[in-house]
Structures are given as C-alpha cells and as structure tokens.
Image 1 (tube, rainbow, N blue to C red):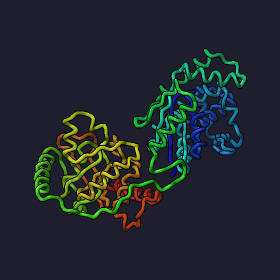
Image 2: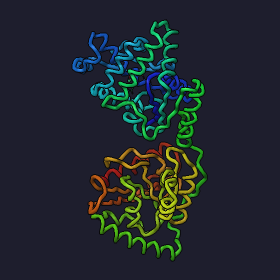
Image 3: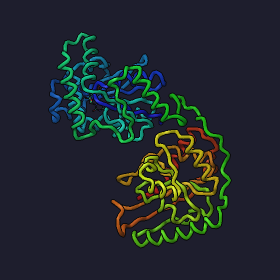
Image 4: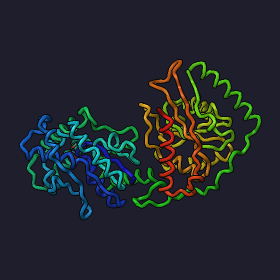
Length: 447
Ligand code: DC
C-alpha cells in the first residue's frame, strides 16, 4: 500500500497542474481521475450518444476499456488501446464528463480502477470524491478552491493560448454549470471531506499554492512517510517500557471504588456485558486498541481493567469548555492533534505506559457511524513496537444509538505481542503488518 494523497475541488481550481508539480517534487504518481470520466464522455460522444441519455450511456460501458499509463513523467489515458490524452480536453468533453459522472454505473465502473492504482503506489490523486468516497482513508486530504470568476479567468487564458475561441463569459458559464452539476448530483457529489484541509487559491500564485499544499502534506506525513521514499522515520529515542510498574496504593484504591460505582451505574442503565475478560491483564502498561462507537467507549473499556487507563482524545475536545476539559483530563485523557505525525503524543503515550497505566487507543481515529471497522492508522502499531507492550484488541458492540437499556457487548481478544511477532523496530513494513493484525483482530470481535 502506498501513501495516498487526495486532492479534491471544483473544476478549474488548478488541481491537476498543482498535483502534477507536487508529484514531480515528491516522486509520487499523479492520478488525474477527471481524465477517466472524460474518456468515458469522449467515447459516448464519439458514438453519437447524448451524455445526458443515461439509458444509452450505460450499455456502452461494456465496450470501454480505460487504462492509465505513464510515460515521460506524464499520465496517458488509453481508451480501447488509443491514447486519447489530448482529445479529452475540449470544452464539449469537459461538459460531457460532468454529465456522465453523475451516472452511478459510470462511477462504479471507474471506482475499482482508481482504488487499485492507489493500492500499488505512492500517489496524488485529484478529483471530486477522492477524499470522501474513493480513498476515505487517504493519508492527506486537501480541498482546493478558488472563486468561480478566478477559475474562469485561468481557464479562459489556458484555452485562448491553445487557440480555442470560447469567450470569458462562456467559460464562466460552463464553470458555474459544472460546479452545479458536480455538487448537486446524488452520487458522490463534490464536497469537502470532514478531515480535509481547505486551501483557497484565489489570491495565490501557482507556486504559492504548491508550496502551501506541500507544507500540508509534509506536516501530515511527517514521520511515517517521506517524499515517496519509505524511510524509517526520525523517532524519539525510546527504551522499551518496563511493564506493570505499581501505582500508589491510595490511587489504586480510589480507582477500584470509582470503577465499582461506575460499573453499577452503567449496568443499571445499559444491558451491559463483557466477553473475554480473561484476556484483560491484571497488571498495567498495556495498550487497548478498540473500534470507536461513542464517547462512552473509554469508560466501557476501562471498567473491567484493574489498573487506570489513559486515552488519547482529539484536541478539539479540550477546547470545548473548562468543565469538559477538566472532566476528560480527570478520566485520563490527553490531547492528540489528528493527522499529525505528532511525536509529542508518542512521548506522552510512552510516559503513561511507563508510569504503569494502560493506554486506550482508537486506531480508526474517529467514531464509526455505521459500526463498520475502518482501516486504522499505524500510530497504534508504532507505539506498541516502540514500547514493546501487548495490544489487547477490543470490540464494542451495540446496534443503532446508545440509549436506556441498550444491549452492549464489550469483547476483549487475546493480547497481541509485538515481541512474539518479532516486531522490534519501527520499520514501516513491520508497523503496517502489526497494524493489520490489530485491525483484523478488532474486526473479528465486532459482529
Ligand atoms: O477534473 P476534470 O475537470 O478533468 O473532471 C471532469 C469531470 O469529471 C468533472 O466535471 C467531474 C467529473 N469527475 C468526478 O465526478 N469525479 C472525479 N473524481 C473526477 C472528475
């Protein structure tokens, strides 16, 4: 699996030019997904079919074979063996692409192709739904915008230079129409992913936009990955954690009492049960890695443990209000900046494990709305590998939303030991393997 960078945004925001420059700078493969939709539109138009006539468009897909090839540092689109890279750049094909891209069968047709390319390489993929649909787990997501007028201005210049006779007003009209099509279609509409960083290029030069996005990418991938070469990151110097350091007896006493009270309240309120409790170590300095369903998850995991747990919580939660900040801090939370290869978080995690506490991590980074378990980030594997402590997989199960008397089952799996798996360094390949094992085990514990 390569490093995936998703660059989305409306037509004419400069995505392809910028992505190309970045790909060159970072030695990534640039994938222009718009070209795929364009090649379908081109084929449809060449067969004399109206792109709006979806009933006629869909059967044509059977005769289409689209491939992306790379030669001389450039992407070439091969349509049934013919290189159509230049032919798909006309205003007619642009509008046709915007229309055919709203047809679900067309999107489905191109979906696997895009995902497969991303699996194999370090890529920068530009499009409309890359961060939201095609690569929801991309390492970095950028949403590039600019006003419609500025985009029309740029496109108009570009077309004029190529000898196209379209007027500025026509270009602007086209852009507004495509914006409308792309944002209003039912399937995979153009929209910013929640975790994407927005860059407005209206007042930025091309070089400034590239610099800005490059900065975002390097900040976000700092550590795990660098510029296409899979280097071992600059890691903090860490000695393996000495397991099970004893906490003060007074603290332990209060922790047990608090645990019993909260367990009582939770059992009264919910229909709560635990499975695999024998897998919960009685000593401390363990990592609990769980799927993430609700804000009560940290408590559900901590209840059957005998040693206090600490957990990473997203930075935003600490900014809500003073009381909430106090409350979550009292319950052992510490802030993490999402998407950052934040070495301070690693230091803090190791410190907590060294103090004898357990560490709860939600590798998916965010709560799952529908209960499915996501791909997860490698951070959990990194901490486990550096600290050389076991990871106990946890599956939190309930249907729908949490409410009174809701049946909740919390399952604990067998500890996963980096040492037994022979994972003793932060080698990216090994971390990926460990993360894969952890996520698989969590998934098995979720029904
Ligand atoms: O990026 P572009 O202008 O070459 O894209 C052409 C059309 O294809 C655009 O109007 C919307 C559509 N498209 C899409 O729906 N999803 C993508 N990932 C890329 C492009």
